[in-house]
Length: 309
Image (cartoon, rainbow, N blue to C red; front, side, top):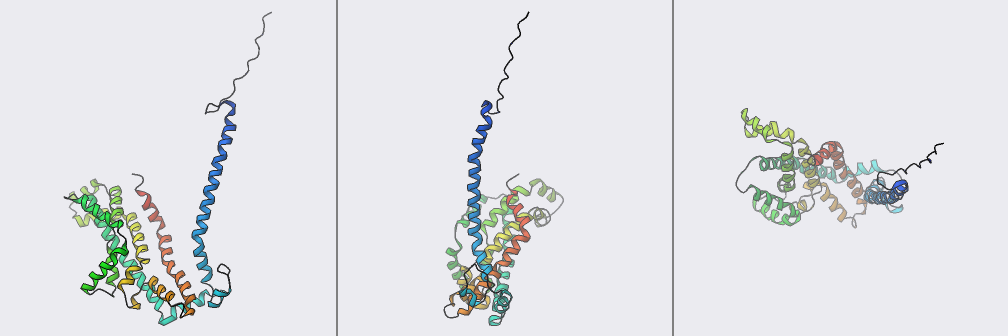
């Protein structure tokens, strides 16, 4: 009678990492630190979010209070809702000077940002498209302008503006904002990524002039760059403080930030302005929020467009 072979023990199933049956336990041990790191990152992000939103939350709550409730109740505790009354008093105080400041800020920011964006796109397009002697050296000089703070050149610009009689006028704030080295840099990067040389050459062969080529061919391709540079310029112009402080003496020409600063400086003598300063600060951030929310689809895609070629 033939002897039967002993049953064969199945080989242990090895995990892909070659650790045998110990693979699941090792993965379980490895998932522990990964979970902990995610918890730490999420906790840190939550802390940063709370820290960032806390001033805005304080502003939203206190803009609804009158002067009495501002000092009688804690900062984050809601009180009687007086936001509409505060807004009405804000826009009627001193014959509606706050509305004038808000209009001035819109003028400086919208008109200045549009002109600055167009100039930046033209310069970036020219740096990308044309070749001339010393182009890269000039471009390096433009990039050097990014490193120079605006406050450093405000006094020289004031001296130049006083020589030509532009001090205490709209032009004293608008003209310096037309130069945006960072916008030129972004425009060149976008132009290199979105404007093929073959397309420009085809437009020239069809008889289009250089200006027509830029307007009809390159500019539509650069629409994400236009929105991105415009938002940067708009935000910078809206938050510009030191240049108007140096250039302007007439309060009717003030932007909203400088006007609120002057009100805040007179609070010890006029404590009734507390609610005006807080409510005005809330109103002053509304245009920025509207611009970013309305154009976020364009500037978010514009910021990431150069990452994938």
